[in-house]
Image (cartoon, rainbow, N blue to C red; front, side, top):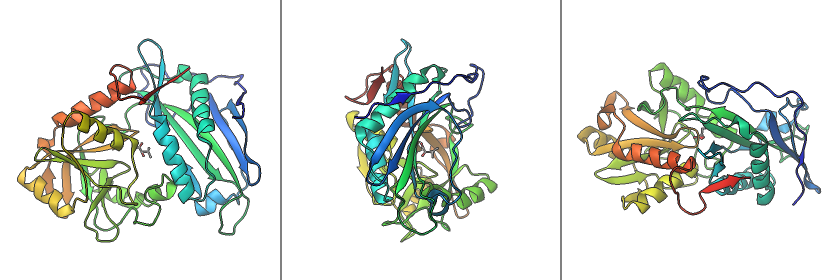
Length: 356
Ligand code: COI
């Protein structure tokens, strides 16, 4: 593997104090990882450099056709000062799956992991330690050919930036109100829904704005073909607990294969809780919510970890879930996943990767 050169900043920034609420994604650390790609040469010159603005040609392909991939994971500091990454192998694997779909060259796994570890290690003093905080890691690739024709770019830049964060939702773990969206769709099977790329997120904005205007935090997406089966919630995967069984939509090509989703399924199975990955229709969800058979509902994602749902709105119907309170299993999953992330609890083999 190529050696990562390190150029440290000569003017470190002031770090946020313990009283800073660390609004998600607003503060960035002193350094970033950067590596370039050229057709025929491969990925070259991996480096840690001071966090900096980019100079790009306005015709760079990423600005016009959205050829880009991003990832999200977190680093935590344990009480005894160790630095842990949560399941980085899953993010690296998913990044390259997204890259293949988006015609972006794959990133060698060892270079990706070493880049992650090195930049987190260099900026480890930025990892916040207050409960509910962590260092959010954002790896991303952009297409940089200065060209306005539509084809895959021949040059790319892969970067990793770091941001000390608090809760993703200002409301923290308070249950959120969700609008079931029956007008817009986020993705369709055969499209790019299972890739982590900006196009899926921009597709969600109009619906998010509409839901916000109606007093709802996020939308629950239905499939783009039948407008019938549940897919995701906002930018997260969705779980329901109905009559004691945990149900989540099966991965079908238009749903993002979430790392937290995978972790929730693994923990439920370990605890002997019945889990089903299957199609679940909006009619089944509405009927379960109306009759009270729906005991719990929550979203899962790296940014918020677990986000309880307290109300569902479908057409003119408003349905309370779990009396608007966080459910027992939802709380246990949140405590367990964050406990493992913080090194307080033992997770399954390989989930915690130490940065040294
Ligand atoms: C996540 O749950 O981590 C997300 O995908 C949200 C992110 C786009 C901020």
